[in-house]
Image 1 (cartoon, rainbow over the protein chains, first blue to last red):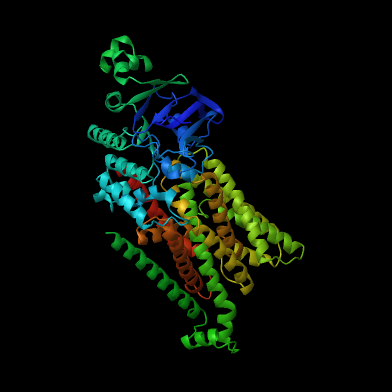
Image 2 (tube, rainbow over the protein chains, first blue to last red; image 1 turned 60 degrees about the horizontal axis):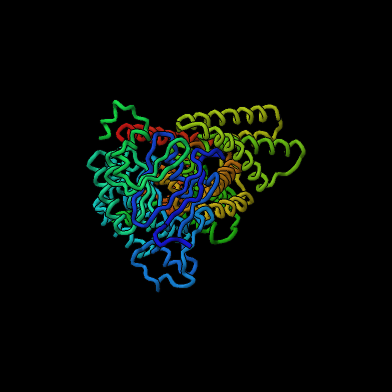
Length: 280
Length: 341
């Protein structure tokens, strides 16, 4: 049985490309409403890990499990909710772990969404067109949006204050605005887990701080966030927990503050002693 | 704002449909023998009246214009699919050498059947063309795996096209037979000599392929927003890619089997239509490309028949004159946008 808070769990996961693992024996769990930041040097396997836990890459070994509820799919969306009462999670409604690799990909996309810095985007796409695509796992054969889908899109765009961008072409807006539109698209999937790969890159400091604010609000509403990030000052500000990736292994850090204090970052990135003052 | 966009899309469809009907009508009337409106009505609705005009309409112009419309639509749709798959706005069956590959295989099968006195069925021609199209496409896909640059892809395609055309030329030169005259015309691209028998095969093949393509508009719309994104929302990208390649192969094979290679229409028509619609959404682009391609092809065939009448120029000559400037325009636009982005 699953503990009340865990949403996603990896079980001695090995991740890599074409049968060759770059990360071994990764075990961690992601809780409801927390922001976990994956940090580590370039090429350590952060993106590989994120792509694997989002189901894009098959694992080399081990598994990634999502808390679901066989008796009550509706209840599964509330896994980890502190307001969940005994009566809600009654007999036959126990949370179980389902391997994300055995799930229908469309079903999986309703539980988690992934935001990559993907350069490809067709021309003549308005921002609303892009956001609407987030409803993909909910629409029918031809992908036509229902009234409900439209409402979700409206609500998400309102929340991220990008309503005014609706009719502008996606390739004509700034990087910061683009990141927001892509975030809106991811939120339209109504996920429980949001996975982001380097969301702060290419953004100036104002947009970076805005992004952190939005993510914190979303997490407060119960969304679980796991993301990779290079900007250590931002990491310090936002991370509830850290997952440090280096030399093929991943280590969980619960006390972010303490990790920074005790020179953990310097060690993680192999920073020579005389330059450690940068991290202060 | 949403409504103005919808209006524009509706207007585009109305315009394209009207254009198609006007061109169909013009293709019936205009030619080396001028035909009056009353004759057309008579020939279509009045049954076989035995006049020269009705004979021309029924056995020559009608199958020809139907073929031009259906195959033009098929070619434009095939181009749109390839542009989507390769994420390259100037990809198309002709520029990627797919038409030439199909041409080579059809020529081979034609010559073989001529030498052995066999009659080649329309269906077999499509199969041969499809095989050739897949051959070229296979090469292109293998090559595209190792290249990020879209321009290199196009150059490779053009080169493959030249190689296939050269092989076809060699075969046509050495298979010296009276019947080869036809083959020579066909290998340059032409709608002349299309029979009702051909039409009866091509229409169902193209229509079924069109419907199957339309059913792919949902995964295609996600694919347009990035391959990783498409995967993350549940598109089986491998399966989708195979479907797209096969469908575009069938479409361009049908064209080549009956009309030979038709240049640049596959790039120009979808692009013009996209500008008219103001959107890339496949659910609109798939039918609109087909309509636009049909009109484009009818116009080009009309010009091919009439400009130097009674001499007919090849369809590719006309589509090149009109289509190639569009391709250049697309490339220039793209370069300009790359620098501003």
